[in-house]
Amino acid sequence: MAAPAFAAALLLTAAGAALLARTLGCRDYRYRLRWDGQAWWLASGEQPELPVHLRVAMDLDSWLLLRAKRRGWRAACWPLYLPVAEAALPAHWQELRATLFAARQA
Image: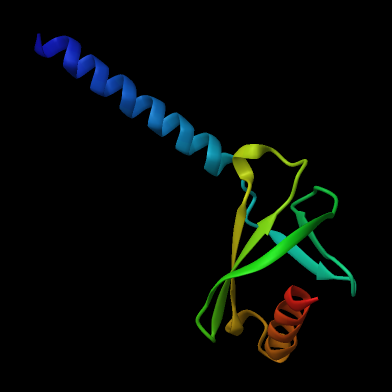
């Protein structure tokens, strides 16, 4: 009786690992975010830019967690969460924050 239970647990663990690998495998982690005055555009690696809807998921003053939604990209990759730190772009941090919050209001 113990062998079938062990096999079932092993199968569930393998399925969970496969799902996690698929979800993380579609991420490139090199994103370019651009605001054109009307919409946010996001490009990943060599993919072309696509329009996205950004929302601030978490605001801790010196870093933001942005939630990007886009129809048309692989479902396993969306929504996409982008951490952005002030240390990465100190000269433009206030402009980025103002743009994110002003675009959300519009």
